[in-house]
Amino acid sequence: MSAPLSETEQTMLRDAVRAYLGRDEAPRWPDFAERLGIDAALLDAQQGAIIAEEIGRTRAHLPFADVATAAWLLDRCNAPALPATAIATLAWAEPAMRYDFAGIETHARRDGDGWRLDGTKAVVGWAAEADVLLVAAHTGADALSLFRIDPARTEGLRLSPYRTIDSHPAADLVFENHALPADALIGPEGGALDLLEEARDRALALLAAEAVGLLDNLLEQTIAYTGQRRQFGQPIAGFQALQHRMVDMYLECELARSSAWLAVEALGEAAPERARAVSSAMVNVARACRFVGQQAIQLHGGMGMTDELPVGHYVKRAMAIEVLWADSDWHLARIAGI
Image 1 (tube, rainbow, N blue to C red):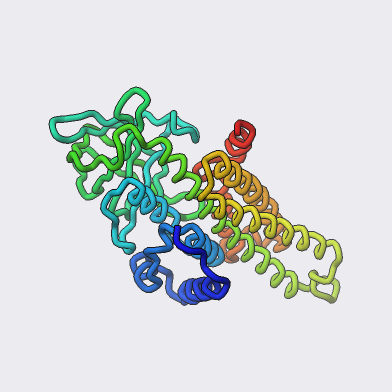
Image 2: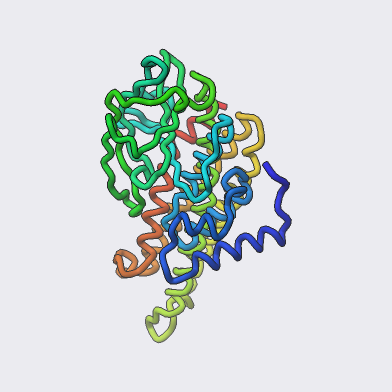
């Protein structure tokens, strides 16, 4: 990790990202990555969290967490790096598993100088748009390995794209005797489990930061709407009961923010401390997402349920973050087991 940013540098980075995402046109990953020069941020947790928070604030459809996670894995495996403008994503989840990597059934077997890959991956974010796929597969009874795959080589690969609840792109992948060259294996054969565990925590820390941005925006939208909506001759923001509810929303936002940044700071710690901080953050973030999201919709009244207002779309993204990589039950169980 590079030296921590000063407060001035943090503000400059935040302002640059916010200015870019505040434009009228929808952001595109190659342009976003090139204009902001995010190469270092893909590997630096502090810079990454600042960017992720601003992405959440605007609900921008960008694969930042996916690309950053893949870039970190490539770096740790001493594999050739990708240009920051490329999209790379990790395929680990499968239809028959929950959140533990022990449930992975995809397997790779040696075939001459190369490999043959068989298995199914589910809900792989940005897979149809990716330039590179990193696929977790067994290369032995209890040995997980990572493979770098070119999705343009379609023989033996079926890709079924769709949109998730938050309108983000994802796809299911089916590998059937998919041929891979010898150098597709990255990192030590059978040595991917610890890397995947750490990659999960890094991805979750970025998602927690993104959720903080979402929550801030939901609170801002709610304050603005209740200040404009009038009932009984005055703005409904003047009613004490609604003020109390917005204060509770603010408290949840701040708790989520503190937890998320503690998780980011803990990424350099030993595995138990890192896992405890990240899972604690995700439990707090998930609770905040549910509470703030529900309050925002209710305080917007019937309009909060419509597609015309952004509030519902923010809530859907928050709901997706709650269960990406793991849900609250899994996090609580992990905390209890440390």
